[in-house]
Image (cartoon, rainbow, N blue to C red; front, side):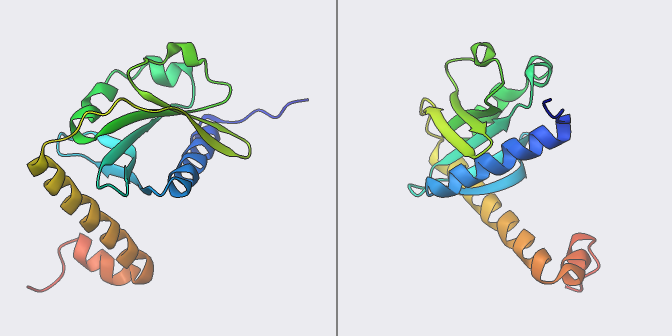
Length: 157
């Protein structure tokens, strides 16, 4: 008898396996990154060459079919990927996007994303945003009370 996995559990499993793959590839993943256009990348990863990868997690067919915003991530990355689990119907996914497939033991990069380099000023701004967000999250882990003061504007100038 197979175990039924909920939508949130499937999404979490895909996210974790994908982040582990990023680390194995030498990429630095950051989860839930809000982009300047208001969209939120499931995973944004910084590659060793300074390029950014945006990874959109899709936990099922309905999740993909109900989401038409994914092309808007392209302007804020050098490469765009979908991450899905092994049971996802891959023929639904567009070929102009990279593909990461997860399974119980990890993840594989099955198709590299076509490169579309960002302009230098946008890359610089995104690098600053990425670094600030990552540092803030690390500070919140080390000192949650101090980070809460900063988040809510209660700090003195």
